[in-house]
Structures are given as structure tokens and as C-alpha cells.
Image (tube, rainbow, N blue to C red; front, side, top):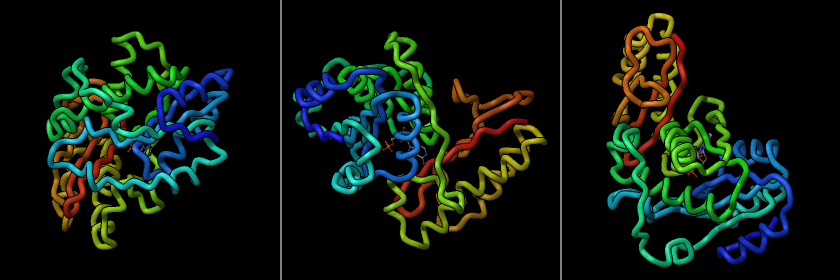
Length: 274
Ligand code: AMP
């Protein structure tokens, strides 16, 4: 496994790779969720490139950019034997100049995560586009944990003819249901227990799905309403492509939740069929 810190080093490392190339983009603080993406990449390509970069463009001014967990040593230990190339650039390497040309992610980026985090998806697509252009992967792997991001990346690839296959990977959870997240490391033991309300709400919604969208949403809502220490941002049942609320009569939807546990903002989602 080769660690490269600059675009020039990346180019040189890529020159040595022949065959199909998969890209996994991460912000580091790697966990089992990321490793599932790396595994899917390995199963779908000859070579796996993992990027580790905490992209400042996708953080709002009052978000956790400075506090975001960073541990390159631990990340490299996890990736050893799983990845061929790890690209971990500095901010100066990624953005030597303030980027002037920006992407407009379109309407899906204005709701849910995009509503709470203005500019977030523009920042995400900027860095995804850049890293795709640097790595030239055949396939890029993204987690369904960030369902809205996945949808926007797919749309960008389609609309800009990037010609890269997008491979989605299901959410990896702890045995008790909590979705794995680098931000789980912010939680105290008590907050971690409280955070289970998110996945419990989704599960309750799923169990009520035979009753249709309204019953699904209300079952999920009642779990979240009873949860101690959890402040809801949104709990919605949306169309997985448009992220607009599903209409009565729809056959499937994405139940998506975002909530603060203490000062940590967590997201989770689950596909439901009615
Ligand atoms: P991040 O490092 O949080 O930016 O995530 C990098 C990639 O890993 C994204 O495609 C995420 O959707 C994916 N990912 C993060 N957590 C999980 C998880 N628990 N299960 C599946 N994919 C995940």
C-alpha cells in the first residue's frame, strides 16, 4: 500500500496501476462502515484507491471542521492490505487557490441535510468532482448512510457525463443498531445509549410500513418524541430520488432522520416498502 500526499505523487502511483480502478472517498477516522466500502471496491476492481481528506468546503462556519477526528496512523493501519493507494492531501494541496468555479447541486441539495447545512452539498460535489478527476476511477463507492449525498453524486455523474460507475453500499451498524459514524466518537456512553433512538425510530417505522406512509411516519415519530436527550432536526419519509415527501399510494420510500444528541448531529435512514 502506497501513501501519497500530493497530486504529483498520486499521478505517479496511479501510473503503476493497470486494470480496473475503484475509488473510496472518506474523511478518515475510519470504521467498519468505511471498510465495507473498501471491501466492495476490492470486489469490483483490480485496484483500490482510498482518499482521506476532511474537506473544509463542506463544513459550515459553526460546524465541527476543527474538532473532526483525524488519525492518519490508525487509518493507514486499517487500510494496510486492503487498499493499493491512499491519497491524503493537505488543504494547500487540494485548494492552492480559493476555488472560483463552483458546482450548483440543484434542488435535491436544498432540502433535509442541505436545508440545515447550507452550502454543504456544493462543497461535497466540489471535492468529489476534484478527486474523481485526479484518480480517474472506473467505479466509485459511496455509503447509503449519506443517502442524499449518494443521490447527488449520481446526478452529478449523469449530468456532467463523468462516465464513472457509482456503487452504493448498505449502512453498516453496530450490533445494537447504531449506524457507524466517525462522529460517534464524540458521544459519551450515556449519549451513545440515547442515540439508539434514531435507529429504533426507523425500525418502528419499518414495522408499521404495511399500514402505509402515514402510519410509518407516525410510528417512527412516536419513538423519537419519547426519546430523552435527543433533539430532532428532521424525520421524514421521502422519495429516494427527489427527496420530496412520499405521497399516499407510493410503494416505497426512504425514512430519514437527523437529530442532535448533546452537540453531536447524527443522521440515519432506512428504505421502507409499503
Ligand atoms: P465520511 O468519512 O463520513 O465522509 O464517509 C465516507 C464514505 O463512507 C461515504 O460514502 C459514507 O456514506 C460512507 N459511510 C460512512 N459511514 C457509513 C456506514 N455506517 N455504513 C456505510 N457507509 C458509510
